[in-house]
Length: 117
Image (cartoon, rainbow, N blue to C red):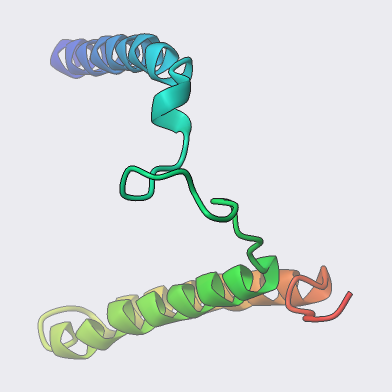
């Protein structure tokens, strides 16, 4: 038990130190205007570097990635069914799909999948 507490304290201390160091380093780079300006082959940019981006397209892309990853996670289950309990895997798959369908219902219910506003 003491070893677990010691490891947890070391991990917490290490992460806090890394967060402080990253915060200190990022303060110096944020203040540098030259590094934050767009750069096009040594010339001033011809147009705005910030192009408007469709949030709806981004949401659909994220939704596609989520369901694509779901397929990538579920397909290897067929191979591992030989070595494990079938009921455990079926419950795992059902819970996984219910969570994903719940997220899809939430997005659909809040109108996040609507193209026109």
